[in-house]
Length: 283
Image (cartoon, rainbow, N blue to C red; front, side, top):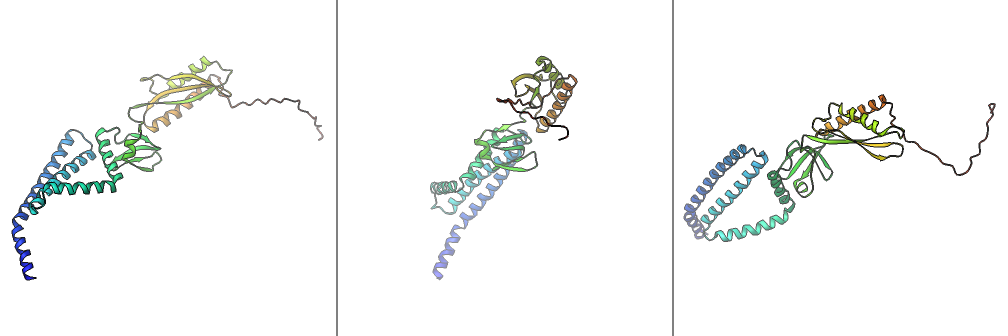
């Protein structure tokens, strides 16, 4: 036992210079990592990159540098471990980890691509696979969407990357529309002119950018249906508020012009005569 302990002590003494060099290399690696992270942060701010994207770039650069520094230190402390063997072992381990955390890595890579491509930004109103709301945060793994009713939806980045995403606030203006019906007895051209003037007078309708459009669309069950389209702000509240004002304006204008907005009419046809019995007043 004494001889074995002496052998261990001798080996430790012999390895002390290599351990010291490895510690120095790891210390230098830590300094390089700190400098690179600061450099990436400064360059990212100058390029107006997103904070999350800057953090991703810092994480990737730090991981690469730490792997390189750790590999060098390992080969110095254990000379029998060559860089080739270490890389082979690391590669096999990475494959096993990749299979075990496939979904996590998929979301991670999708998050990086979303941050690089920037198909939508914080504050945009988007819709994807039934999830619709305002983008509050974009992380490496998922995206936080706040619905208009206040609920928070956490969507994996892979879902946003693989499926089509509708960015409703990509532009400042968005088109809104509704269907308005008038009675068959009304003059179609007059009704169209009345509706156009009413919609143009609404404050939230941006007819200075794109004109209001009103088209006779179809013969309804009890009315001539007009398709009314206008442009307003792209936020959901702008669409709802402008539709409220447009409906009220059209209703007032048609009433003033004595143009009827009909209720559904039903016509009953009886093939055989219906017997009618007189009822006396005393009954």
